[in-house]
Length: 306
Image 1 (cartoon, one colour):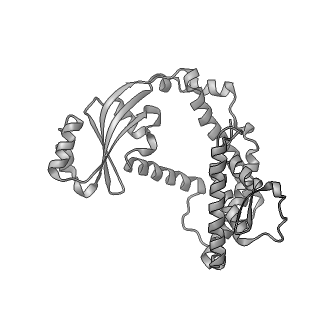
Image 2 (tube, one colour):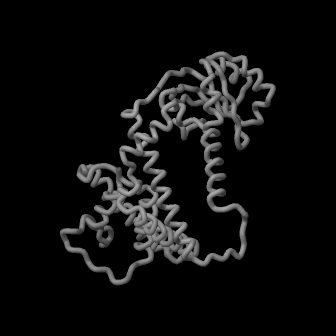
Image 3 (spheres, helix red, strand yellow):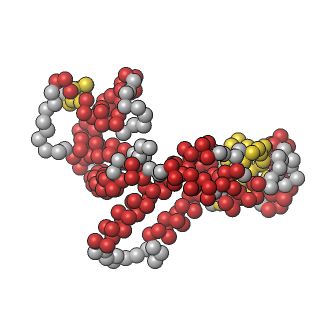
């Protein structure tokens, strides 16, 4: 299984702009065969192209159309970098600060990426995958697929009394008429999700729902109504669940390796806070932020659960 380079790629692309804006000393002129394009005399090289291609998912053999698209992106980037330099944006205090932060982010990411190695150390074994399935056998056997219509409504447009009235609506068509008659502004979305992707606090309620039933939730001034359209069994065998389990264990192993790296660095470092904004440990803060992110996904019509 290949490691996830998406976050590293974003940081490293920032570094490419950083080097172009900030300069990196006397440049060694590339050989003519390495030059793919010139923008006002500035070369775009095979090295740059190959680097960006290596950060993209997929096979090593790339179609010419994909290579051309990346090359076009490099040319466009070079034009923008030259414009920024001509306008002396590389001297703007905010830009300088952003570039320095990007440089630090790339260095920090590089250390973490090195701790992960080539990703093999995080790849789960067959025994681990099988063991995980056995530990959660009931969840895989009772797994269900839900088709739901969500209605996202500003809370001030639907108070508790209106919510009780809406509870009498029996199907999606009647719901559309009900909202239209009251002039309620909303965002409507049809979604499909499985029980293993539903937050636990909602999962138990969804198991009891029948077509036409409505589940209500609210967060950040938004009221989310989820109407059940259909529910069916979606049990998974070990073979069917193997890829999903492998991905979950792979992410868990990666997190464990990164946590070990950070814990080791903390032991070796002298850290002094001159001001703290919260007394909770870092891990606790991260969990709270994760819960907020979960609420946000609900408030956006469960987009993150599709």
